[in-house]
Structures are given as C-alpha cells and as structure tokens.
Image (tube, rainbow, N blue to C red):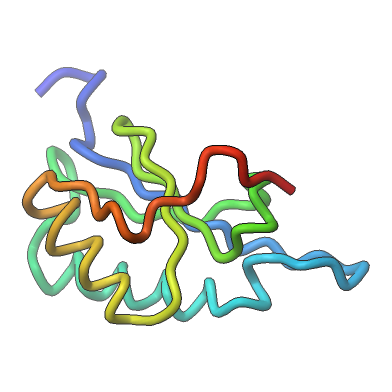
Length: 111
C-alpha cells in the first residue's frame, strides 16, 4: 500500500448547521446517517488502512440537496433519506464498487 492509497475510499458526510436558518444537512438527519454509516462500516470490517474512512465534514456547499455525502476518490455525490439508503450505499458502493444511481445528487445542485 502506498501513501496515495492509504484508504481505498473516503466518505465525507456534511454535518454543517447553518445558524441563520437556511437549509442545511444538520437539519436533515445527517448526523444520524453519519453515525449509522460508521457503525455499518465497522460491523462489516471495512474500515482502516486499505479500507474505508468515514468522516464528518463541514459545509460541502451542496445545501439544497441536503443531506449530502461524497465518496472519494470516486467523486460520487449522494443524497439520502434514511438508514436504508445508507445501507444501500455501504452494500453497493463501498463493498461492491457499484454506484447507487437512484441516490445520486444531481450535478447542478448547489447551495
């Protein structure tokens, strides 16, 4: 394993909470989804060097699609609703390398 591939995939969940009351991931269940994803990755033994890292992130500037997560190095952006969506991302994308098309965040969705 080289430094460049310390993790096979890195998943960032926006957990930002906009104080001014604007739409944001924190108010759309992002923390619960992040916690569930971390738990699933741990239970499946997918984490750690050579595997997957699940990280909290500040604003990813895609607020109108909240909640959002992005998988790198694949640069695949997801939106999700519940734990079943997170399970599908873990089972299909993280474990099997298959993008979950139905959860893709449209490319024109921004703040």
